[in-house]
Amino acid sequence: MDNKFSLCRKELIIEVRRLFSAYNDKSSFDKSGSPNNLFDTVWRDWKSSFQCVPIDTTDISNDLQEVLFKYSKLKQLDVFNMKQGLILDSTKFKLVGRVEFDELYTTLSIPQTHENSYYKIVDYQQRSILFVFLNINNQISNANQQRLQSIQTDHTQIIDSIIRKFPKNGNYSIDYFSFLIDKCISLITEHNTTEKSTNARQAILFTNHYIFDFTFYQCCRAITTFEELQDHFIEQNSLEFKLGSLESSMREIFSQICSGIKSENLCASKLSSIIFSGIRMYLKDTLLQLLQHLFVNDPKHDSTYSNRGFLHLYILKDLAKKKVFEDYISYINSPFSYINSFILKNIQEYSKEETVITNILFTLNQTTQDLKTHCIDAANSVSRNIDSWDEWKQHFHESIIKFVRSVKLSDLDILDMYDVENYEQFSDLFAKTLEDSIKTFNWRAWISKVLTLDIFYELQEIIASSLVECRALCPFCKEPCQLSAGEHKHYCGTFHRPQGISGWHFINSRKIDVDECTTSIRCNHTFLFEEKLYNYPNYRTVNEYFKSWKILADDSIVSKYWQWVLYTFQKNLLPITRY
Image (cartoon, rainbow, N blue to C red):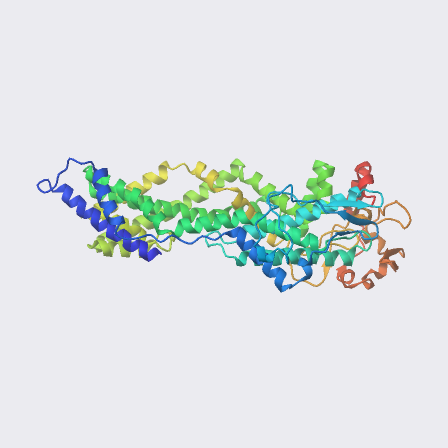
């Protein structure tokens, strides 16, 4: 596509130069027409000489149906057997009904051949997944409501991160849905496995019916992103679109050279515009690394983002400072979602600080000056040794490509519109124009425009990837594992909590356990798991998951911290710890 566009552009340049030569020859050309009208005649004739074949588009919603039908037909998993019900603490809860979506949502069109063998698909896009839960008292406990909401929020956040990572410069592929479906299924099945291992009486286990609804809902949410990927790819690769942008550029250049402005001046201004655009692209690519360096190494963060333990300690300090009960519950029920949101919020607030903006401006200015110097030196050096325009472009591009990587040699073809005779004078004009462009550019406004939510999300995911990779939770208190790396067989925690916060209570009683598991393992107390009693010191004999946790006795200030939390929020905790 790029080669074809480059050839088309060169053909047009030749035609427009021929038109200008005729326009400049008063004896052989009628100059009564305006430059725009004259350009139109050449443009129409030239464009009609070839056809633009449009890039095929894909019906992405239909792709989703096809992929789901494939999964159903292959029956790689039992997910699509559509068994009714959700297991929610099976000893107490049951699902008595499922909300009918037919009247609330738009039904997607299903091929007739699949109607008898497949579940009826409805459009959940931009909607919530709704379920009706009842227990023997016709109500679900506040604690399980909180946990259920936290689990769904955590899972959705993970899927959002996956969707954002699809390549923005590539075209959409139907394989994206297969990848996303596999991730959704593994996410819920892994949750169920963990819940079975750690929550004998209070487990929230999702059935195949829920997995299908969750998977389909997340895929529908991804449709918009996939459509944007497809539209962007077509825009960047459509010959018709590129020619449309070329028309306005060529028309402007033709009008300028017809106005009598010296060719060297126009060419220097155009080259300066191309190079300055490449410099900004380079700076935009490095801005993420710059902000990450400033954020992580800022002295006021005091190594917060150097490892997971420091980050958790920083969060605990922040929670204690704010004393907002809802924040504590969010952190307890969904620690990973809370950590990701916490990092994102801190990045956004940090990027608005005046000292940070000043540091960014200073660094960008230094980089810009270096790039500008390299480009000007390259132009001067080539101009002293080259007297052919094609060779000048070739050698100039070879000299700058390692500094301004986004500028292609074909981008300089547009300069063929001009007649450059004095190369040294042209280089001087280019240097002055580039310097003026950099000096008058509003860098502060540009930074505000470039630092979008996408940049913040990307930086948050970079930082979180080394701090939130392991998602293991203590089987007693749900304290996250403090080891940052994802691949390890044994887990440990530093800030264990009172076990009652995660639902442990005395048998045949509503009284919650206020001791941390780090305290309990030193005593000869017992706990009930899957209708069997175990001694706390022998907790690792329960199952493989319990065995993988290394819980050490602890009398540190962290123990007193959580006792303070229980005391401070005892009235708030009482209703939601009653499972």
